[in-house]
Length: 191
Image (cartoon, rainbow, N blue to C red; front, side, top):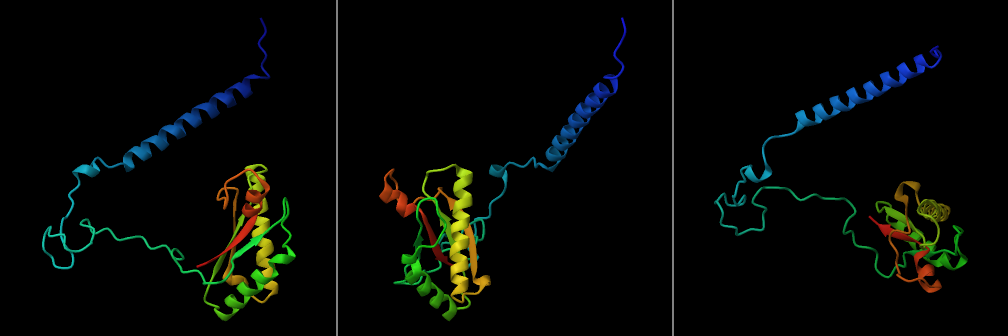
């Protein structure tokens, strides 16, 4: 017979939040629909013209007939220094730079100091053991360790960008220690 009046404000707040969420969703859908175009891509006119000669449709050059420019990404297809080892390997579950990597680090440091306009990506990798989150963090720690080592050898911080790929880009496929060892690495990629 008696109503519990203490829960009424909570119920009203819940109902208000539910309606507010629904209203916001409706506004978002309406805004997205208004941004849409009714023109189908298949129906859009395409100019078939050779831009170098102005002649229609002769196709003598490799120019895209729609005059779409190619996207240029800086650092892609940059030639890597020849005869320069660019991989630093790590022990299992470790981001300590091994002593056998000294020659690789010194050679890359000499090259970067001699070429101050060159930049490098320090790409940290792991083997497939461990969770994805753990491997991303470990790959980042490995890349940072190589960055610190190169900085100690005189390379400018502005020339280096550490990044982690975790287990996503294995160098070797396999579930043996040899494959795992090849995957625990930092690759020095010149840009």
